[in-house]
Image (cartoon, rainbow over all chains, first blue to last red; front, side, top):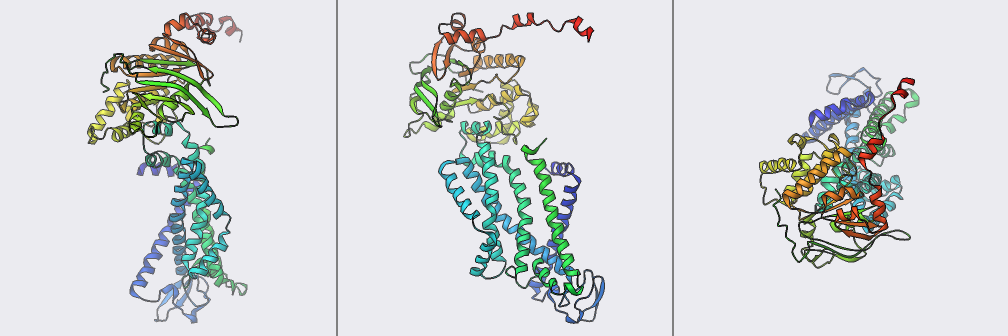
Length: 296
Length: 284
C-alpha cells in the first residue's frame, strides 16, 4: 500500500510533486496553528496572534518588536494596525482555511458521491428525484445562500460550512452519477448481479472502487474553491468572527495599503495564491493520471 | 469440486422456456426475442447458434435475470423465475450462472483474481468455508479446475491473457456450484488456438462434473462437438433444432444452410494461403 502510494507520487509530473510538498507544508502549518490555538483556549489566555500591542503597529517585515512584557521578538512578516504579528496570524488563517476546506469536503463529497452512486445505479425514479434535487440546489447562488444562512444562524463559520456544503455537492453528484451510469452497464457489474450479490455490495465493493478517482479529483478541486469562498466571506465580514481569517486580514490590510503598508496584504494574498495554485496543479495532474478518458 | 450429477433424463426438465418474448425499450420497441420455447434436461449441453442480433444473448440475460421478459415463462425445476410470490426465486438465480463474452469487462478491474473467487465463496458458501485457509485452498482448487496455475491468484485482470480471463470467468461461475451454466459466446473473443484449448477444457469439465450447460455461439462448428442439442435462431425465433451433427451435415432450414456454409474450412483455406511468393520478396 505504502510503496504503491510512493510509486504513484513519483510517477506524477514535477509540478504536481511540488504541489504535494506545498500542501503538506500548509497542512503542517495548519496543524501547528490548531495545536497552539487549542493551547491558548485551554489556558484561557488571549492568543498571541490576537494580542493588541498598539505601540508596535505597522512595523515592516523583519523588524524587532518590543513586547508588552519587555522582551523583543522579530516580526517575520511585520505587524498589522493593532501591532499583531502578521506571520502568526497567517498561520491561524491557514488553520481556518483548512477547517472550512476539510469540513465542507467531509459533508459535500460523501453526500454527493452517495447520491450519485444511488442515482446512477438505480436509475428510474431514484435518479429523477436526485437529479431534481441537484438541479434545484444548483439554481441557488452560493453566496446568497451563505448570506441567508448567516442571517439565520448568525455570523460565523457555521453559516460558511452550511452554505458551502449545501451548494458544492451538486458538482460531485453529477460526475459520480455519470461515472456510475457508465459502470452499471459494464460486464463486471452484470456478473456481480448474476452472482446474486446484494445491491449494497455491488455499489460499495464493486462500483465505488472504480469511480473513486472521480471522487478524488472532485475533492482536489472542491477544497481550494471552499477555501476561496471562506476568504471571501471573511473579507465581507460575515465569515469567522474574532479569528484571523485570511479574508479578515486582507480587509484589514486594505485600509493602509495606499500609505505603503504592503506586507499584510501581500503575504496573505501570496499564501492564498500558493495554496489554491497547488491544489489546482495537483488536481489537474490527478485528472490526467486517474481519468481513463484522458489517458494516452 | 462440483459433484457429478446423474445424467438421467428425468421427466421434469431442469429449465423450460415457454413462449418467451423480450423487448428493448425504444420507439418503436425492439423485439429481440419473439416467442421462443425450448427445454434443457439435467446433464444436457444445449447450443444456441445464430448471427449477431438474433436474440441469443438476450435469452441468456433473461434466464439469469438481467433482463425482464415482456411475456412468456421461464421455469427452473418447475419454479417460475419471474413470478413474484415464488420464494425459491432467489435460490434459483444462484443455481444459474453465466460466463460472459467480454473477458476483460466481466472482471472487476480493481480486484485480484484470487479475491474475485474468494468473494464468491464467502458470499455463497459461508457455511462450508469458515476460515481463510479453507477459502484459499478452494480458490486454488477452482483455478486448477479450469486448468490455471496458482500464481494467477495474485494478478489483476488486465495482467493476464484473454483466454486466462475467460477461464477465471468460468471458475467464478463454478464457485457458486450452479446447476446450470450459461456460456455466452465464451470463445468468440479468443484467437483460434486458444478457442480450441478452451473448448477442450469445457468438454473435459462437462464430462467430469456432469454440469448442465447452455452454450451460445455464432458458429455452428463450435457447437458441433460440444453439445448434445443445438438450437438455431434467426431474428428472435427458433428456425431449427436437433442433434448438432445432424444439423451440420443435413441442414433443413435456409438459415442453417447459410450458417454451415459460413464455417471456414480451415484445412482448405490453409492450402490456399501458401504464404508470400518468394520471388515477390526478392523483387522488393
